[in-house]
Amino acid sequence: GENVEQHPSTLSVQEGDSAVIKCTYSDSASNYFPWYKQELGKRPQLIIDIRSNVGEKKDQRIAVTLNKTAKHFSLHITETQPEDSAVYFCAVNTGFQKLVFGTGTRLLVSP
Amino acid sequence: EAGVVQSPRYKIIEKKQPVAFWCNPISGHNTLYWYLQNLGQGPELLIRYENEEAVDDSQLPKDRFSAERLKGVDSTLKIQPAELGDSAVYLCASSLSGQNTEAFFGQGTRLTVV
Image (spheres, each protein chain N blue to C red):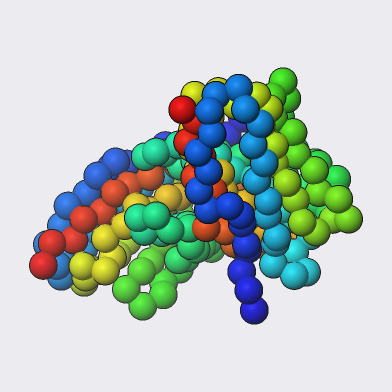
């Protein structure tokens, strides 16, 4: 089955810095790559996603890049703010709506 | 529009007791998922429904876990008997049918088995 690895497990940055979280996957047939943000005690919520026919997607301070050849994708957050502090999960859709999640990255943005 | 609704939010039971969780998906969402989330980990799929049919239950421990989605709307997940290791958050999610559609999560049920 699909194997999703996510790094780093924790990331501490100063407010205003950029943050980058990386995920690798194993199934070359995977075609959909969402990123979820989960605040403490709350539900995971989609923040951005990318499909396999696109190499990069941006939404304000958040961007995702995809390298299908190397089977990795990354989340980029620029100008980080304290409210960006949360756990971020990458996920991979192996097809037929089966989402496999990474192990999560705890992002801490210090003022 | 209401999102995915789960109940209860919290449940504490003694080991060997049964427990059930309920999920009401977003109206019109034919795909429903149950995920297990252990502390500090990502969600792990237990079962996925397309309408009332369980199309992927390969990760569901069938000796003690069962699920149903009668009429293709609400769903229940049951554990009988519960074990200490079942303590976790159980998340329900729903999405439109078809590939590559966003999954919307409920608030989850936090289960503690003592």
